[in-house]
Length: 114
Image 1 (cartoon, one colour):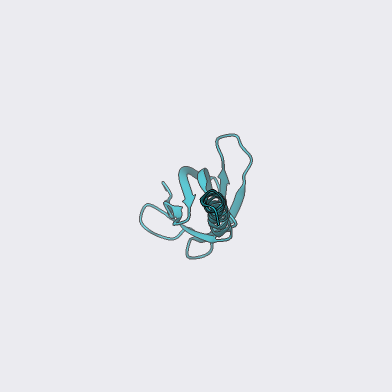
Image 2 (cartoon, helix red, strand yellow):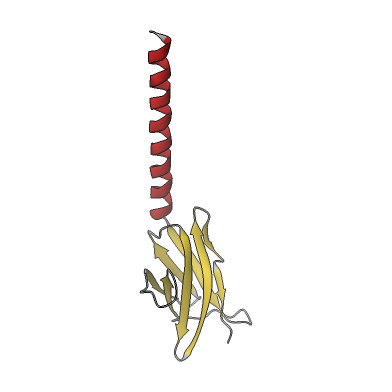
């Protein structure tokens, strides 16, 4: 096999490998379920909180969840990125910025200011 042909195949193989790695990595993050938790400033779990993830102020929610009795909530198939999270419980509410990546939701514990 001539050296030029071998070099072309090597480059082509490298491009295909990078492309597959990118898409498999993206699919892994998007296919995961992420867990978070809502607690108050004393560490008590906050059940029944409505949690909305948006890409910024005055934007529609892209993900929604409700905390269970131990304050945990789950979102599935979330895209990596930074989100503004609004947490509401009755008339009380607070907002926090979180990020989602292959390691999960950061911060995963949302501390209410009540």
